[in-house]
Image (cartoon, rainbow, N blue to C red):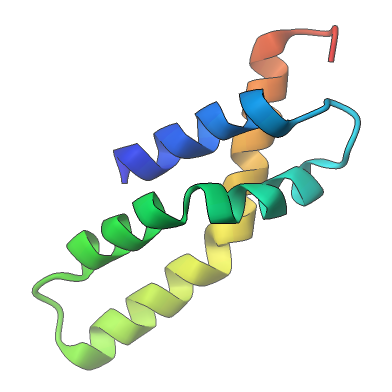
Amino acid sequence: MRAYISCLHSAPRKIDDGKSDAMSVALALKPLCVAEFTKSVKIQGQGMNPQARRMFEDRVAARQLEIGTTAVLEERKSRGPSN
């Protein structure tokens, strides 16, 4: 999961104009971090029975936009008031 979170924090530095709403930027991050997301979910789902794994994957996928939006807002905050 660390690689995915790291991607979500580094990608906004490349694409965020600081003016677009954070959710729109988070949507743009999805394809940039898809490999890390897929690998993270696969690793975390190992050892679960198929039904539990599907429920886990659905829950994480549903939160993906929320996690991305939070990362964008955290990056904006770390850059300070200029953005």
